[in-house]
Length: 330
Image 1 (tube, rainbow, N blue to C red):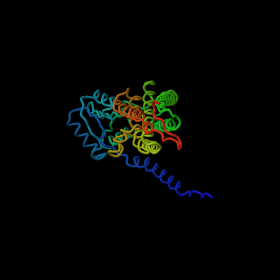
Image 2 (cartoon, one colour; image 1 turned 90 degrees about the vertical axis):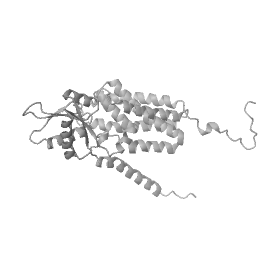
Image 3 (tube, rainbow, N blue to C red; image 1 turned 180 degrees about the horizontal axis):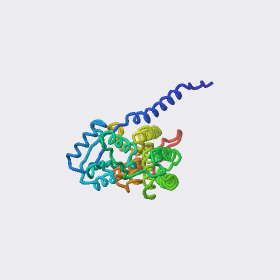
């Protein structure tokens, strides 16, 4: 007579899992603060130093890194090329206010925070606010874009897990992975861009970035499964979901996350995919080279691990009892 299994082990595992999920998603959000946000200022270095001191008083030291540029045109170029989140243009004449240039498409949270800081420290002249890279009217707060990272990552996890468990021929797994990624990328772009209007870039480029993100996550899981079996698959899924999504910066900005963790987030596929898609959808691809390189490295590493010979390929099966093993070639 078999003894019934105790329910306490799965209960404890579920409690730990739920607690880990809460910590992973809530902790980074509770620690949001600017860390070395790049801001451009039109004018000489002296003007940049004054703005730096003003923002240090409003936001704290090391919150913003101010860079002097030539004029308003140079400020706009810095923002559109993802070299700065915002820029300040001094008054054009007596009695005229300064102009704060922001890019809500780069991060609504950063745009709102810098606007509040500029208005607080403006003294008698509130700045004129100009959004040089606004979000689409269909998604004015960027909520749809922020949440799009989660299904992208879950889709990559499910793709990698299902292909690892259901497709026995490992040579067919890369082909199946790319096929799923391309079709899912097209379908996701159709929803986010064509239907919901949350993206504003070139349709094919957006679909390619999403497909590469799914490929990177799925290939990483396939490679880890090839390397370590089911434990590798679980470790990969937990890393992508518990670290990758909360540290991606999709819901805020990488520079708002705790120092160090933001760098880790951008080195994981979810963060790289979110940054690449943001640059592709709103900034004509400017600033996407680094994130695309990260995604390509993850995809290549996973596929290389998948091509490694398994242990079974180097081990001959033992002969059955009572039978004599016949040497190969006879």
